[in-house]
Image 1: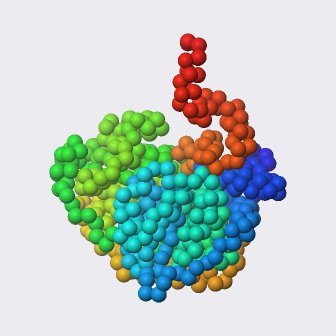
Image 2: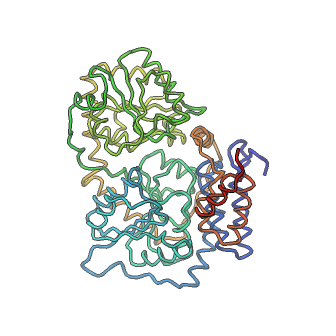
Image 3: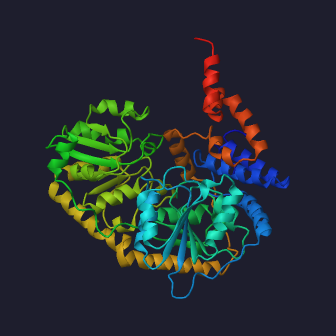
Length: 535
C-alpha cells in the first residue's frame, strides 16, 4: 500500500502500520498461529486509536478474532447457565479494560452500578495495571457483586476463558472496554450461546473492536449514534441512546466564590473561566486552537482569567501557548478535588479541538453556565469531536462562529444575572435525563433491546459510508495531540508468543536502540551502565 493512502483509497487518511499488522494477523491465522494473529489485531487496533486509519471498524479484524474464538470455544465447550436462582436479583457483567481513579468512563461505570439497584453488578478487568479505584470497588460490593481482575494472567486465551466463565450465568454483558481490547471478542465471538452483549460507546470518536459480538451499541449522545450508523455497520435496531449517568444532585458547595479564589490565589474581582480536560484535548491542530480562540477575550478585558485543570504548566507543547497570556491563563495539572475550581469560576468553557463532555455536564450540574465552540457543523459526523447532550440541547450554548462564541463568553462574564439564570436552567434540565427514574427507564429500555436483539443473531451489518471530513478531523486531532504508535509494541509485548517477542525486540532495537534496556532486569542494566565508556 502506498504511503498516505487509506484502506479505502482515500489519500492522507490511513496509517500503513494498521494495514500491515492486519495483513500479518490474517497470514498468521492461515499458519494456525492463532495467538500471534490475536496479538497482531490488538496491535493494529492500538495503532488505529493513535493515528486514525480512515476506518471506525474492520470486518477483517473482527473475522480474525472470530476464527480464533471459535477454535477456543471448540476446545472448551462452554455451557450457558441459567441467569441466577429464582428470587435473586439477576446479574449484569461489566467488562472494562482498565479503570482509573480519574477518568470519564470509570465514573460512568461507577455511577451506572450505583443507579441500577435492580441488578447485581459484577466487573471483570482485562488489563488493570493500576490499583482498582476504591470508589468503584465499593459500588460493586454494595450491589452484591464481585470484582475480578483477569490480568493476573498474561495469556489472552486464559483471560478469554475466565471471562466466558464469569459471563456464563449473567443476564447481560456490558462492554466498557478500550478500543483495542481483544479479550471480549476472543471470549464471545465463537460462542453461539453467549449472553446478550451491549457495547457502551465511551470512545465514540475512534476506531474500536467489538462490533461483531455486540447485540446493541449504547451511545450516550446523538453525534456518537450518527457515526455508529454511518461508519460502524450498526443498523438502527442495534443503536440505543442512553445519556451518561450522573448523580441526582451536585455536591453541596464547600466554600464561597471568594473563599475559593483566596485559596487559589486569584483576584477577587477577576472574570474567571474554567476548562477541565486532559492536555491532549487542548493541543492545537489544523482545525482548532483553544488558545487562538480565546486570546481576543484577554485583549478585550484585562480582568479575564482562565483556569485549565488537567494540563500541566510544564507540558512541552502547551507551555509556549500559555506564555503570551502573562499568567492569566493557568495550567493547574490533574486535580482530584474539583470543588475549589468550580466554586472560583464564573463560567465553564468546553475544550477544543476535542471536547470534554463529562466535565462540562458536571460543571452544569453545579449551576455553572457552560459554553462550547466547535469548528464543524452540529449535524455533521465531525460533531463527534465536540459536546452534545440531550439535556443541554434546548439552550444556545454551542457555537460554530468564533466571534459569536467570544461575544457570548464576554456577555456571561459581564452579566452575573444572565449567567446565574443560564446555570440554573441547565442544572434543572440535567437530572431528568441523567439521573433518577428517567435515566433508569432509559437503561431498562437499553437492556430490553439488547436482549431482544440477541434472539436474532447473526445481525445484519450496514455497509459503512466512505471516508469523509470526519476522518480528516480525527486524524488531525491525533497528529496535533502528538499521539504516536511507534512504541505501542510495548503495550502488547507480554501477550506475544516467544517467537514474536524475539522478533519484536530486534525490530524495536533497530528503530530505538536506546530503549532496549526496558527489556532488561535492573541488575543487568546497572552492569551495562558501568561498562559504558566515559563521555
